Image 1 (cartoon, rainbow, N blue to C red):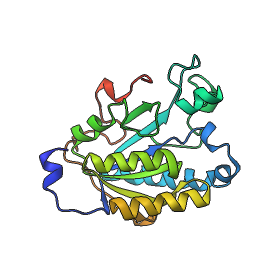
Image 2: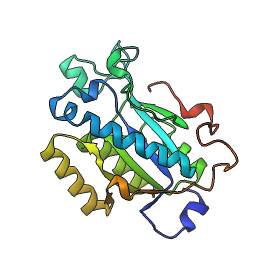
Image 3: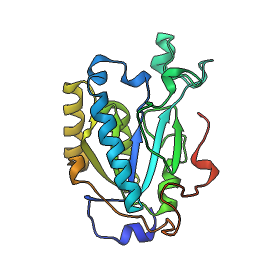
Length: 218
């Protein structure tokens, strides 16, 4: 976390980066997630537009695994079943999304921070507060939000931009709000601001990032 980000007063409602997690075909196949697909897409697209208009950072985070199993998690190895395999339709971003991200992070574990330059991208931009949207609340959202706390980042959980099986969703949100004091905010109430590390003279839909902001699965 940069000195500039640390010196700003706490203001969870002032968001400097929109982080979109795992809105990919394979992850939206379960019935409870497919049922809210339209809502997730609409909320995410609307937030992305507002973020770009304000000069805030937009980061797309996706999961991709190799077909040979070399990046699979322990549970995937035990089940001998790969998901979001690179090059397949299941790993593709939902086609309805319109993000124009400044950076795309490819991960192989639940947390966006594990084995990726995600933290470096946020730090270079001077981001102190992120808004999370995507799936699933009890896995990738939960682990990324917890790791964000460990990186001294404030987290806004976008209430209508997250999804999981309802019971698991509620438990995850309760854990994050009680353990890490993270805010739950409706998408209509999210306010974006430009982080200090981005050049305001550069188009919000074309901020140049380091080549390391897109990486191969670890």
